[in-house]
Length: 253
Ligand SMILES: [Zn+2]
Image (cartoon, rainbow, N blue to C red; front, top):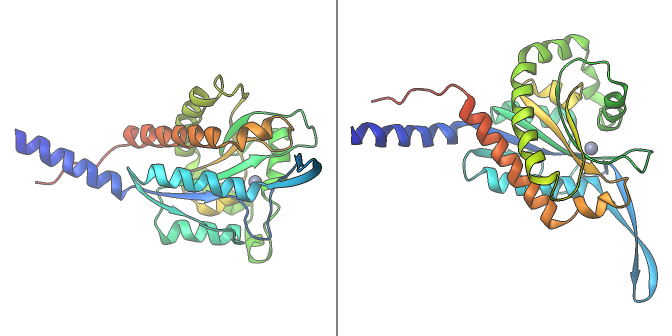
């Protein structure tokens, strides 16, 4: 009996390491993403500091990778400030045989009062507010990436929407529990969306918008080490929950 339990635990651990997560910090290099301008007094003089979405996304992505790696096999689509095309990110998902794709972003709006965190998964919808976010995040699609078409999107939706919704819900619930009250940040919900990077990756995946860089007070909150740490921890809890809910291979004797 003891041998059985040990074998089971051993095989479970092996199984978890066989689960591959690809963490995708949005933008990078010449693709800045959202930009936030913060006025600071330095040596008595007012100076404007720029904060780029690409940098915050990389910082959060690295934190998530570090924490997730304790349980699963994890890769990053970029580990420094480099330009990586959407198709390239998706191709990497094939190369590493990712079971799950997590794209990381921070939001921006012309309305500086917009605030909160939201989680997206690939599915059809007619939500105009979501279309605005799609226009921003799909902008970097160029050159060879443009081959994406409706047939490809439909196939990806059919193949992944159900599982992606499950993982989006698990992760979002954990983020909500961790940050909504503690940081007084609004829960904007789990939403279907048509982000090209999710369609191109053709596997269960989500796109996280971890807060609004265009909101002058929210940007201070979401760029803090404390927020990023708590948010990353919540993502890991959500992935573990999703993993635990999936059917496992039986241990071999
Ligand atoms: Zn973005």
